[in-house]
Length: 241
Image (cartoon, rainbow, N blue to C red; front, side, top):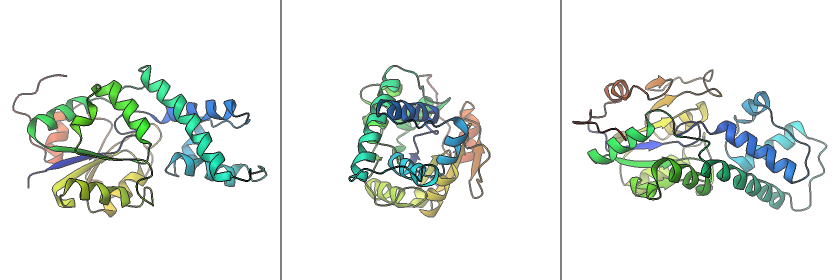
């Protein structure tokens, strides 16, 4: 079977972004006059909830039950998340969060071979753009046939909605593509959409349950091994990027 497309998660998959997100949340809290602080251990727990706004609400409900919610609580959370996004995209623009090993080469190889590329993530369009503009250049969007991100579907991962949206945009079936994820929630999402999925673990996800994954890698520094195990064609002549 010829693989027609690769669908990428973003946070933790294309780049080790999670600690950047954590620090940006803390900057947003401080700027907003809140004494909240998410350390690594707490953020590890909060990552079980996908979506930044959803994560804030889960934190308040679970760890700040006495917090006096403003009348427009949804607006408060939305604004707080927007402040966080500003700090995070600033970090990206300064080049503090590079792409993970092998990612840029994989995207280049797939583009040259005619394999379609797509994104399926819960992070915001601003975050995706800021990361990939630094990692791939201002024309980064030219590499991707579908860019599924943010709140464009009603239910976030582990629901499969974002993958179904991307498959529809690509006009292909789940059997025609593979997905790259880094977390259990992401894997559950892609598998529920019927997509063969490979996982690249990171600090926050290495102890999660990846049952059902077609393969689990530390990273993609050995792309040849990934190509062989994923069924992607080996590039005829790989040009370093």
